[in-house]
Image (tube, rainbow, N blue to C red; front, side, top):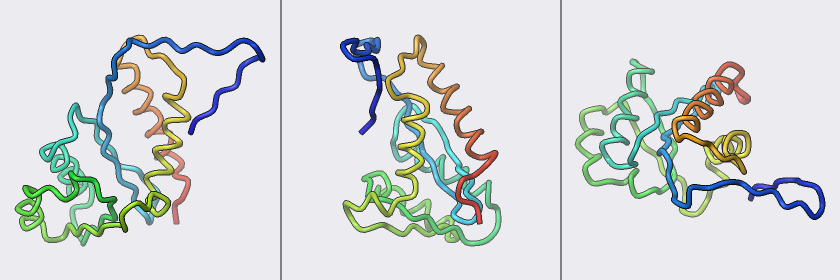
Length: 147
Protein backbone atom coordinates (compact mmCIF):
# COMPACT_ATOMS: atom_id res chain seq x y z
CA UNK A 1 0.00 0.00 0.00
CA UNK A 2 1.28 3.48 -0.86
CA UNK A 3 0.56 6.57 1.21
CA UNK A 4 0.39 10.20 0.20
CA UNK A 5 0.29 13.21 2.49
CA UNK A 6 -1.56 16.46 1.84
CA UNK A 7 -3.01 19.28 3.97
CA UNK A 8 -6.17 18.46 5.92
CA UNK A 9 -9.27 19.12 3.84
CA UNK A 10 -7.31 19.39 0.57
CA UNK A 11 -7.36 15.96 -1.02
CA UNK A 12 -4.63 15.50 -3.59
CA UNK A 13 -5.88 14.84 -7.11
CA UNK A 14 -3.78 12.91 -9.58
CA UNK A 15 -4.77 13.18 -13.25
CA UNK A 16 -5.48 10.05 -15.23
CA UNK A 17 -6.21 9.16 -18.83
CA UNK A 18 -8.94 6.80 -17.68
CA UNK A 19 -7.21 3.74 -19.15
CA UNK A 20 -4.51 1.44 -17.84
CA UNK A 21 -1.33 1.70 -19.87
CA UNK A 22 2.03 0.36 -18.88
CA UNK A 23 5.19 -1.43 -19.81
CA UNK A 24 6.08 -4.84 -18.51
CA UNK A 25 9.29 -4.88 -16.52
CA UNK A 26 11.41 -8.02 -16.23
CA UNK A 27 14.03 -7.75 -13.49
CA UNK A 28 16.57 -9.82 -11.59
CA UNK A 29 18.94 -9.10 -8.70
CA UNK A 30 22.45 -10.47 -8.62
CA UNK A 31 22.45 -11.77 -5.05
CA UNK A 32 26.23 -11.35 -4.70
CA UNK A 33 26.58 -7.77 -6.03
CA UNK A 34 23.12 -6.25 -5.61
CA UNK A 35 23.08 -5.26 -9.30
CA UNK A 36 19.61 -5.22 -10.83
CA UNK A 37 19.18 -6.28 -14.45
CA UNK A 38 15.99 -5.22 -16.15
CA UNK A 39 14.26 -5.22 -19.50
CA UNK A 40 11.14 -3.34 -20.51
CA UNK A 41 8.69 -5.01 -22.85
CA UNK A 42 5.29 -4.13 -24.29
CA UNK A 43 3.82 -7.56 -23.48
CA UNK A 44 4.83 -10.09 -20.82
CA UNK A 45 4.77 -13.19 -22.99
CA UNK A 46 7.10 -16.15 -23.52
CA UNK A 47 9.12 -14.36 -26.22
CA UNK A 48 9.75 -11.40 -23.91
CA UNK A 49 10.72 -13.72 -21.05
CA UNK A 50 13.19 -15.56 -23.28
CA UNK A 51 14.68 -12.23 -24.43
CA UNK A 52 15.24 -11.30 -20.79
CA UNK A 53 16.84 -14.67 -20.01
CA UNK A 54 19.06 -14.22 -23.08
CA UNK A 55 20.10 -10.82 -21.72
CA UNK A 56 21.16 -12.47 -18.46
CA UNK A 57 23.10 -15.17 -20.28
CA UNK A 58 24.99 -12.44 -22.17
CA UNK A 59 25.59 -10.43 -18.98
CA UNK A 60 27.05 -13.56 -17.31
CA UNK A 61 28.75 -15.43 -20.16
CA UNK A 62 30.31 -18.16 -18.00
CA UNK A 63 29.28 -20.27 -15.05
CA UNK A 64 25.96 -21.50 -13.78
CA UNK A 65 23.09 -19.04 -13.31
CA UNK A 66 20.51 -20.00 -10.70
CA UNK A 67 17.36 -17.90 -10.73
CA UNK A 68 14.98 -17.89 -7.77
CA UNK A 69 11.51 -17.17 -9.15
CA UNK A 70 7.94 -16.76 -8.05
CA UNK A 71 5.31 -18.99 -9.61
CA UNK A 72 4.16 -16.65 -12.34
CA UNK A 73 2.60 -18.50 -15.25
CA UNK A 74 5.23 -17.19 -17.63
CA UNK A 75 8.01 -18.75 -15.53
CA UNK A 76 6.43 -22.17 -16.12
CA UNK A 77 5.49 -21.73 -19.80
CA UNK A 78 5.63 -24.97 -21.80
CA UNK A 79 7.66 -23.35 -24.57
CA UNK A 80 10.43 -22.50 -22.10
CA UNK A 81 11.62 -26.11 -21.82
CA UNK A 82 13.42 -26.07 -25.19
CA UNK A 83 15.22 -22.81 -24.31
CA UNK A 84 16.38 -24.24 -20.98
CA UNK A 85 17.65 -27.39 -22.70
CA UNK A 86 19.70 -25.20 -25.07
CA UNK A 87 21.12 -23.30 -22.10
CA UNK A 88 21.85 -25.87 -19.37
CA UNK A 89 23.83 -23.38 -17.25
CA UNK A 90 20.54 -21.60 -16.51
CA UNK A 91 18.66 -23.24 -13.65
CA UNK A 92 15.24 -22.08 -12.42
CA UNK A 93 14.28 -22.63 -8.77
CA UNK A 94 10.78 -21.72 -7.62
CA UNK A 95 9.70 -20.16 -4.34
CA UNK A 96 6.79 -21.72 -2.46
CA UNK A 97 3.42 -20.43 -3.68
CA UNK A 98 2.11 -17.24 -2.04
CA UNK A 99 5.41 -16.25 -0.43
CA UNK A 100 6.22 -12.72 -1.67
CA UNK A 101 8.19 -12.07 1.54
CA UNK A 102 10.87 -14.47 0.23
CA UNK A 103 11.18 -12.70 -3.13
CA UNK A 104 13.94 -10.04 -3.12
CA UNK A 105 12.46 -8.41 -6.22
CA UNK A 106 9.29 -7.51 -4.31
CA UNK A 107 11.27 -5.00 -2.24
CA UNK A 108 12.82 -3.42 -5.35
CA UNK A 109 9.41 -3.30 -7.04
CA UNK A 110 7.84 -1.59 -3.99
CA UNK A 111 10.74 0.90 -3.83
CA UNK A 112 10.46 1.64 -7.56
CA UNK A 113 6.72 2.24 -7.33
CA UNK A 114 7.00 4.53 -4.30
CA UNK A 115 9.99 6.45 -5.69
CA UNK A 116 8.88 6.79 -9.31
CA UNK A 117 5.21 6.24 -10.05
CA UNK A 118 3.13 6.52 -6.88
CA UNK A 119 0.60 9.37 -7.16
CA UNK A 120 2.28 10.85 -10.23
CA UNK A 121 0.70 11.70 -13.56
CA UNK A 122 3.02 11.40 -16.54
CA UNK A 123 1.83 13.47 -19.50
CA UNK A 124 3.51 11.08 -21.94
CA UNK A 125 4.04 7.35 -21.46
CA UNK A 126 7.69 7.51 -22.54
CA UNK A 127 8.38 9.71 -19.49
CA UNK A 128 7.55 6.81 -17.16
CA UNK A 129 10.18 4.76 -18.96
CA UNK A 130 12.75 7.54 -18.56
CA UNK A 131 12.10 7.70 -14.81
CA UNK A 132 12.25 3.90 -14.44
CA UNK A 133 15.56 3.80 -16.33
CA UNK A 134 16.97 6.62 -14.18
CA UNK A 135 15.86 4.78 -11.02
CA UNK A 136 17.60 1.58 -12.16
CA UNK A 137 20.79 3.49 -12.98
CA UNK A 138 20.80 5.09 -9.51
CA UNK A 139 20.12 1.75 -7.88
CA UNK A 140 22.95 0.04 -9.76
CA UNK A 141 25.39 2.87 -9.07
CA UNK A 142 25.06 2.16 -5.33
CA UNK A 143 23.46 -1.29 -4.89
CA UNK A 144 21.85 -1.52 -1.45
CA UNK A 145 22.69 -5.16 -0.75
CA UNK A 146 26.08 -5.86 -2.28
CA UNK A 147 28.34 -8.35 -0.52
